[in-house]
Image (cartoon, rainbow, N blue to C red; front, side):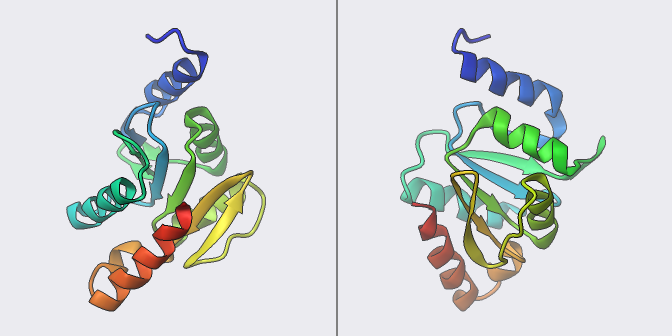
Length: 147
């Protein structure tokens, strides 16, 4: 256990939400998705995070629907505030709805948003964008707005 109070809070969130969250308290970019992302989508996000200089362990992945059940809006807010990432990505419409409810403010799909001082890129269907070169370009253009 760390002596840094921010890391202690983050570690507590990781323990509390175990199967829903993968990453470290030091991760600077949080990706929220309804279900586990494909290896291709996750790889694209990891490469993007590295290109955008989000650090050594940049991604914390949050899956809303896991074996233990579904996360609610308050769970999502607890995870975000407990891990305190620099920026957020919502990978799909369900994740967008959860963030919108968690922060009690509307979010725009396929756009850059602000949530309590954090930049949040909200996708309607990030995985679907990975299917075409044009979709990949649009996704990358949005991800670049994280910095």
